[in-house]
Image (cartoon, rainbow, N blue to C red; front, side):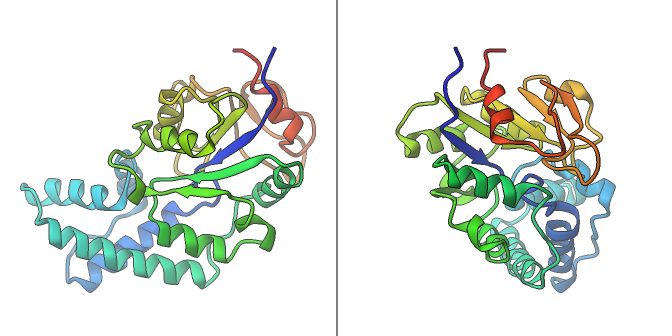
Length: 253
C-alpha cells in the first residue's frame, strides 16, 4: 500500500517559474557586457550549458572552453555576483511569473497541511527575488529552502535532497519531488525519492528516455483548455494536477 502524501519538495528554475532563458541567460549576458567580455549566450548555447548546474560552475565551464585554460576563481566570482544582482533586478521588474498551476497547487497543499520546501541549485538571493513577486500564500508555504550555498555538490548529485530529508526529520515516506530536468530527476532518484517531472522550455526537447525514472511526466500543472498532457504515468483527468493525482504517484512502480 502506498504511503500517504506528506511533503512536496519543489525545484525552482523551470519548475516554479520559467526563469532560465529570459531570466538567468539575460543576466549572464548583461554581466559579460558590463565586464567588457565579447560573449553573449544565445538560446542554443545556453541550452547546452544547462547540463552544468550552478551559475558559478556554468561560467567556469564556458570560460575554460572559450579561453582554453582554467579561469581565475575571483574573476568567475565577480561575474557571478554581478549576474545575481542583474537577475534580481529583472525579477523585480515583474518579468518572471510562476508557471500555470504552481500557486494553486502550493496553496492547496498548504491548506491540507502538507509540508513543502524548496530544493534548488539557485542562490538564496535569486529565490528570494522570485518569491517576493509571488502571490502572498506561496512564499509562506515553504517550510525551508535548500539552496546552492547549502551544499558542496549540486544536482545531479543527491546531496540537496538528502539534506532536505534531514530537515524534514520524518524519513522519505510520503515525500514527492517536483522537477523539470534530467539533473533534478537524477538528484531526487539518488536520494530515493519519487519525482514528478513538469517539462519546461529548457527541457521539453529532451528525449523521453531522459525521464524514464520519473513517476510521471507532464507538460504543465494546469492547462487552459482540455486535460493535463501526460507523457508518462497515470492519466490525469481534468485540466489540473491535483493533490489526489499526486497521491497516485506514490503507488509502487
